[in-house]
Length: 317
Image 1 (tube, rainbow, N blue to C red):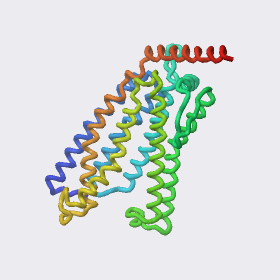
Image 2: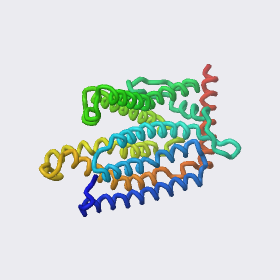
Image 3: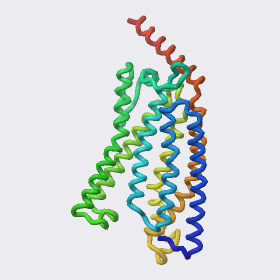
């Protein structure tokens, strides 16, 4: 627990709490704005999940500040949020690909999603494999394969949680799980590798989809980078701070331990940084992305281009 009698520590925790309350209000207002203009629910529901990321990270870090140490359930919560974000973003792209108009209402159309993917014809996978999307069935097959590469992180994360619980209940005590043992280190490596693979597959999908003219206005890469950068800070930032703390660049290790210095500094920075990510999300997830008039024009354009291509194929045969 932090020192209530220390003016510096108490003030820092209080100020971070105020910052997070402001962030929460901004996020809540943005979510209400989307809810008020729920033009295309299949995609906007995913956006609501993505908008919660700064609050999950911020309030988790604030709790760690309040307690004064690292908390295992908080790490699990952040890992779960990473997996949820991968799922939400992948399905968001899929829903936006299938964004169509029927009877003056926005609906999801698998056919439109497949036809948009067919416009690019070639796609890449992790091993530089080229996949030729020439039919609707191949487009759906590509979607399944790319989603499998991204969603495997969810499966791996569940397996890691189950194995960790088993280790804790059998021959591993709480100290070995918290501070590392051979089994736990290998689980951490597997989880990190799986997360890297999931991010790679998501970026490949984004790189492919953003080349489609009708999808360029969404700025998918910017959306993904902002959300993921906030999540990756929870991993990268403590490592950097640990290096600084080890070299006595933050405060002398004679006064406090490296672990305590890292935990306090990292969580303090994360709380303050989340207000920045809140404003960034405010800019990159506008309600104007769901413009029915713009969609109607692009839908007609896709249909015409694909029809022209089919006519050319028929003529050549």
